[in-house]
Length: 474
Image (cartoon, rainbow, N blue to C red; front, side, top):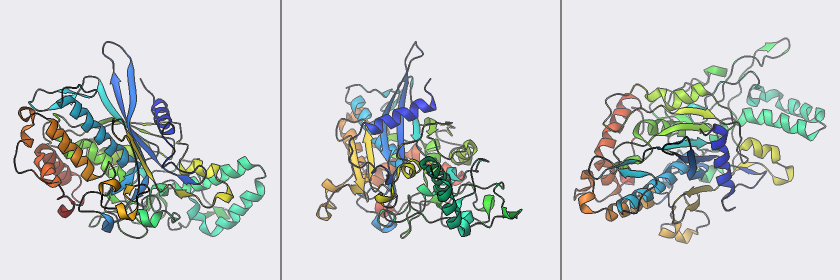
């Protein structure tokens, strides 16, 4: 059985083997990593084979006005979303092999005509180097962790100067910097800076949470009172807001949240919310649901070394949806196993701060997002601002500028799969003649849409509805 450390090490090694393009500059830039790992239990033995089939890095998302009705811009470039979209490419390619009679490493025929299911012994797990942004990142602080630096803002300069004077050894200084910064950025590394719109966040420092007045005990601040790590993801419009009270009263847990930007509003739901949705509807999406007898779920979620709470992960990714009933056949509320590794991603913000030298300037999140997936054509896709990295303004709006992960490209890959399927082997839902746009094909996936309606009505009634005008491309 693979351990959490085994999974983390595998994902880090896969990242290390990729070309340098799009990776952070050591000591100056940081990023987050996520991956989908295929696990195969060999028949008649205890052997377990595991391989990364999709990997993503990134911390950015674009603003509302940058979204395109052509589907040619990558809206959300958080690592978790990049990894999942890369996995869609991988699954589409595997279905293409299956319907073409070339054999798939993932799928075999299901009992229902035109449908496919996972091969026996095959499952998928999800890895992320940091707790997902949003609800899962509202984490109680442990007794060993100091109060957030922002709680002691008025004394910060004196305290930091004292640390520097007392720390004659470089190690002590780095340790003190790390303790302070881990608290300050524990979740903000995926909030006010990391989750900004691409244009505004790249050169912006994370804004600290509002200062909290800490009780004075014996002439000093009492650092033993409970507190929480805070998230910069804002509750969705029309829902309850955070009370912003001191310490544990700062947030309301369980809320749907959108990824914030310093400038323009984004429409991207937090990664906690998206993972919760995938835990009911599956991570295959509406289009591939046409071909699948059952939804695909992550049976295990592994988190790298970072601030972490099992209870917060359980609440954010499962409990909020655990009461959903009356789902269509093939869909269920699937509680994953949550594990944490002791291995930290070498390009995390905390590790970057330890490696940082003053001459490198200030630390910033990496502006690029990397996608790698196990497909034969263009497995590596590096983007910035929603387009391929390095593309010129003149090329914007052309195929040359499009990421392989944008809606339009994934739609074209799906249409290629449909074309490769014999007419007699098409799923019933794809035999209609009135399917033309991306939206048409999504809405025609009736069981998926019915399951989504149940989830929305019973658990997430405030989930924002997509603008139909952004889904009418062909």
